[in-house]
Image 1 (cartoon, rainbow, N blue to C red):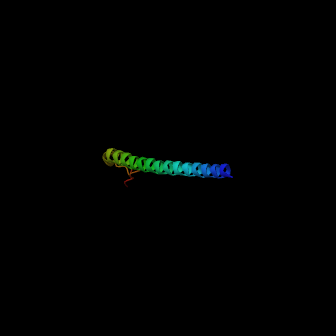
Image 2 (image 1 turned 45 degrees about the vertical axis):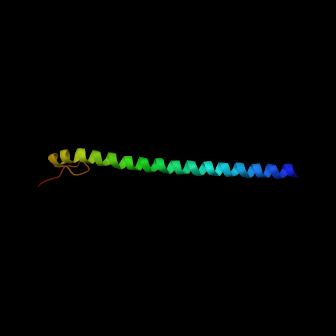
Image 3 (image 1 turned 30 degrees about the horizontal axis):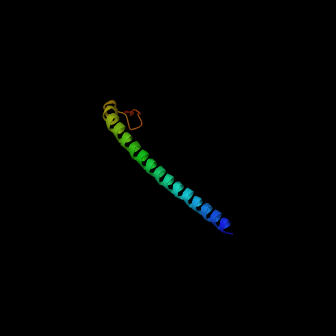
Length: 70
């Protein structure tokens, strides 16, 4: 009977350990996703700041389309 209780306790501890590891992995994944999102925004802002003056000189809008003047 003691061996069965020990196995159950070990299984419970193992399950909790896996849950703890999964929780940590999820938190790390969210942190990485947050960092990737911030990096994407920063790169977009840099690219926009770099291309906007050139587009304005060419008479283009944000999508690179030229304005038709009639």
